[in-house]
Length: 165
Image 1: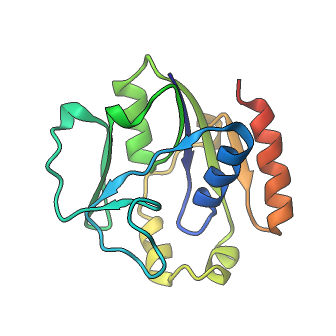
Image 2: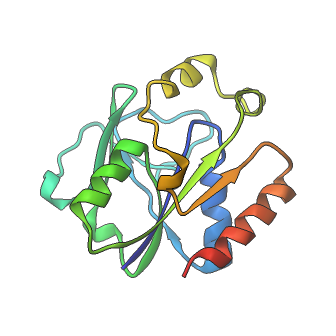
């Protein structure tokens, strides 16, 4: 089983990178569950499965985290063969500890605050992100800096795609 994880702050482009990698490599993007309400423009079953409460036993979870007062998780049976999972730092650490048998390729997507603000990330979400666990860039197999154009981002994702074995 191979899992590509994508981690980074709000508005860095994690979902965009996940879609690009999925298109390039045929990897399925895992749709996690969350108890948070849908944001404008989000579609249930695309960005997340939006549910009222978490009723899945933790033994059946691949990863679980609480962020911003809401719960996020993915079940073990959602991963078959190879997949992409957008996950926060706490969830990634738990995943590494709990499932050492899964081959991980860990990607960090980073963007400057100015870029994230231009993308519509609220100052409240930016401030909340500052409270997230900070992992050293050396923890990741690849780091993508997303401050420029979509074509520049695609070029970086293409380079990372060739690193994934």
